[in-house]
Length: 423
RNA sequence: GGCAGGUUGCCCGAGCGGCCAAUGGGAGCGGACUGUAAAUCCGUCGGCUUUGCCUUCGAAGGUUCGAAUCCUUCACCUGCCA
Image (cartoon, rainbow, N blue to C red; front, top):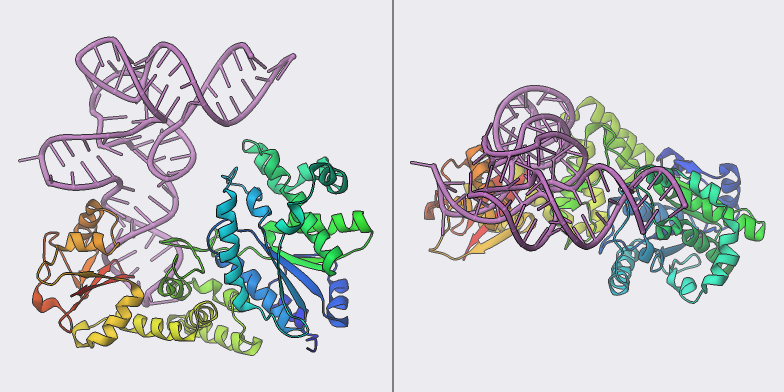
């Protein structure tokens, strides 16, 4: 595999480097041979999410440019949990963490190539921590960490002000730093990157390597993506923006990208797609001129959904979105088209001849969490059957409402659709 | 270990015996305006068999006609002292 010398320029142009160690030294390393690099993922949930995707794609960019990935899933660090501002984490038990390790691995694998000269390797930090004795850990690792430096870290400072931090989480940085040292010694890994919230842990590792071996290694951090108003990204009605289709339907995933704010489209295209620079700049120009076309959002939704859920699924979602958001008269749609669309959006089946009220249907489809909420939605004028507003909470759909003889399209607000199939 | 303060709905935070399903802000949800945007404005925001009923104010008891509000015990958190 030949090296792509423009890699670092491309990463910088895409805005993927928020912090870094000496960039000139890194550039030198990246152009003189295949650099072994690592990026870590802690199994703190059964699925990875939006923020992790940025790291996965960045790893793929590096591999595509000829460098060698070590993808670390934190079976050990996941047992501890890195400190975050929202306070002390609840510890997960070993069985849970171990199951999540497997799920996270399977999510990462499709993005990397495990063949060829720069094949990727999956590693688990449990492998080099579980046999380590406390005394060895304190002598070999702990000795290199001045507590005054650890206390000065931003997250720790904030936690101390906001009510304290346990020794467990305070020690997290030692574990992650040890990972870098271990991968450096065992595999010759000389570059680590991660999210900017991990920057303290990442530099901790680089510093540990320097103190323990005298060698200097490379690191960079990707930026934290925020909405235009500065708040955190990655929320949908279902919670975080999960990559697992069981936890967030591909349809909702697609919709998330399609609804991205105008100001963020360019940034997200650069970070989350592999489109070349000229194409992204052309999209941005189109977008600036005619924002109402939302060409940027459409390209973004299509490309990212294809990366995560595949081209076939993406095509189905696009057809579904077109059918549901096309407005107008739904009764002209064929039952097949509509059925496919509604299964993407989510659908429930009810028995023919025993149709429940609109209120009950809103609850059954999950559009409303309780009957009270369903009634409220109807009272607010936010409930629609086949694109027609429903005003009576006790209304029952008629046989003549069934599209193609078996489908009802239930909508709450502007964007939430669910199907009801009468069987 | 001692002393003091705290624990209220998704989050923050009022309430300090009846007028409390509980002020206010944020988030969320719906409507209007739009481009399935942003901003703004309006409404809504425990549950139900909904002119009423049921369950909520860290947990369990108690006082009272009546408690989120008073008392007791327990749990957890914070600060100061040791």
